[in-house]
Amino acid sequence: MTTTNRLQHIGVAAALLGGVCAAGAVHAAEYEWTFQTSETSGEPQFEIKKQWAENIETMSGGRIEIEILPVGAVVPFDQTLDAVSSGILQGHLTDPSYFSGQNPAFGMLGNLVGAWGDPLEFMEYMQAGGGEQIYNKLVEPYGVHLVGAAATGLEAFPAKRPIRSIDDLDGLKLRAPQGMVYNIFDKAGASPVNLPGSEVYTALEKGVIDAADYTVFSTNHEQGLHEFAPYPNYPGFHSLPMVAVSLNKDIWDGLPDDLKTILETATDALAYELIYALKKRDLEAVAEARENPDITVVDMPAEERAKFRRIAQKEWQAWAEKNDLTQEVYDSVVSFLKQRNLM
Image (cartoon, rainbow, N blue to C red; front, side, top):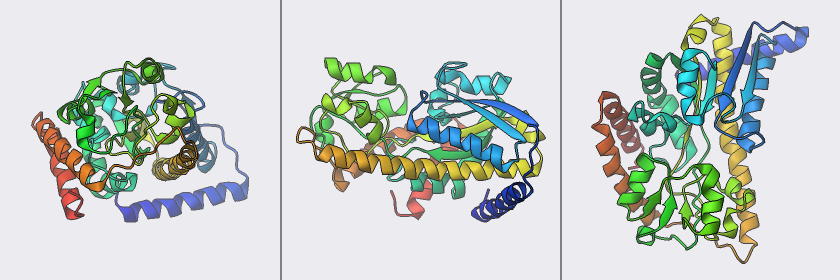
């Protein structure tokens, strides 16, 4: 969808919302859906996604009701794609990287490590650089439709020793999920360990790992990771995961245009709420951390970030050769970055 169409949709949805509120209309739900997320209940991202569902109910005048469930409530985190396809779930809000085993293009679109210096760069690529169209080319054969893309922001990097250069990664035992991020850290000289996010705290505490690729700064701080890894990098230099907001394709195809507009508009709002709300929380957590003499916040210099990106680009090229869609993702991202002098 073009930016112009998005603005038109916002106007249409606002008019719909105004009409509903003015008339005090109350309708029985025509559509009742269950969406599973990739967060535990109570996490900030989970609460923001619940608000997304409430906004849709309000904007639709009660015609759509969506129940938001935490990770693992119905199926494991890496099986929601199949669950939405089969109708076990009607939708999900999750990181597509979890489905890299089904097609590596999910990993490239879900988290092209080292590509994005800011979540707004990624959102521009998805909305205006062809990313959403490629994603739907990838996902619709699975019976799933991308309503819209969102992003959390750059992940931080808690570490037991300061990581100020790429050389400082040499031999570092760090938690990283299997796939592109694992491979890139390995090529950068680190010793990645594949652990689920739920084990990061204990692994840092016991010395199993020295650092972690694991979510945003504020969440790391709230979970107490900096007690064991007192040299967090902020802003992060590596990982910026996508949040795919997707619906079963048969359901999507059967919706009237006004409800499609409401879903797209609410998802655009979700994307920017995630970016700004999580950044605000991060900045507050960083300020608190800097007041603690036992924590040193590290900002990797621009020239070192550029070195990491060059290492990452070689892995992008390797993944591009896996199939036609991975090549299309690679070509579109590189073209987008070059046009904006971001390579």
